[in-house]
Amino acid sequence: MEDAAQSQSTPNAAFTPRVFSGIQPSGGLTLGNYLGAIRRFVDMQESGVQTIYCVVDMHAITVWQEPQALLRQTRELTAGYIAAGLDPEKSILFNQSQVAEHAQLAWIFNCVVRMGWMKRMTQFKDKAGKNAEEASLGLFGYPALMAADILAYHATHVPVGEDQKQHLELTRNTAAKFNHDYGVDFFPMTEPVIEGTATRVMSLRDGSKKMSKSDPSDASRINMTDDADTIARKIRKARTDPDPLPSEDKGLEDRAEARNLVNIYAALSDATVEDVLRDVGGKQFSEFKPMLADLAVAKLAPISKEMARLMEQPDEIDRVLGRGANRAREIAAPILHRTYDIVGMLRST
Ligand code: AMP
Ligand code: TRP
Image 1 (spheres, protein in one colour):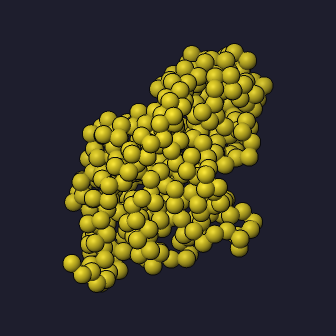
Image 2 (cartoon, helix red, strand yellow):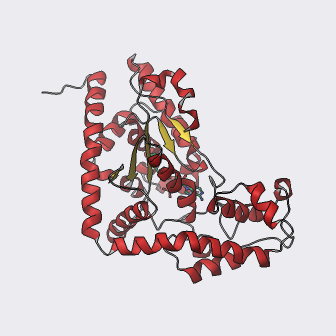
Image 3 (tube, helix red, strand yellow):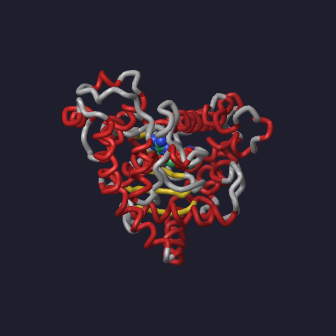
């Protein structure tokens, strides 16, 4: 949020700072989600601005989800939010489908955004693959729903990983086109917040691919629910090169796998890459990997333990989400009403 002051001079000065972000309950949480997103969510919660964090179940079903798995993953992601430090008293935590305003505003935005914008989205191309004709219409329109998630709250800042940059750009374009077409200054120009050394955690098996919950290889990722032995084994087996670690950042050029492990180490220890390399430069991976495994276990084990504890009380999780949804609706409903008025939709009062 360093740029909060700077945005005072932009049209956003009229908007109270408000943070929104979301994660899909389409699988277990990964170390990438934790370092790239959830840790930032917690920082922002502690910074004192209003924070709203969503479990985006409507986005998850843009690709097939088994109903029972979706339910469990929705609760598990919520448990992960709380175990990692999000406090349902301080932040609004809820699942997207309980607040109908998201879908309602998404429809308006479906009529604002252009086909051409959607066709340029790299996440659609990656997820649809060669078989785009068979992809759901929801997967294609996904970014319009994401714009609605954010703009239904007039959110000014959105913490995300690097891969969401293009979607945030589309959100700004959607707000700008709506404002322009209807001659209003209604939606803010939301700023992405992509910060830290772990905005793009890579696969442990292939340094050119993002670590992802949907990768078919479980060895490619660290799941937040992995036990200590599994974490240690995955790190030991992580792909690397035969050279020792360099003592300076530029020695990591063209060494994607080595860079990834150093970045993870830096992020987990709240240090810079330079600091880490000062300590470990010259070491072989056979020595560095156990250090990284110990650090990862020390940071992640308490979170996964707490997640397991929370998952034993699903009713409590559901209650948190229900209460969060009510609070979210209180903010989104008046914004949707004003949107309908701007568009010219009749509303009997
Ligand atoms: P998703 O799991 O696709 O719903 O992503 C949820 C959040 O985690 C988004 O802010 C992503 O940018 C972030 N994220 C997902 N994977 C990674 C990764 N490998 N590295 C950093 N951030 C990530
Ligand atoms: N598209 C995001 C992802 O895959 C998830 C998401 C949905 C989101 N709506 C959002 C993130 C709104 C931030 C704000 O990671």
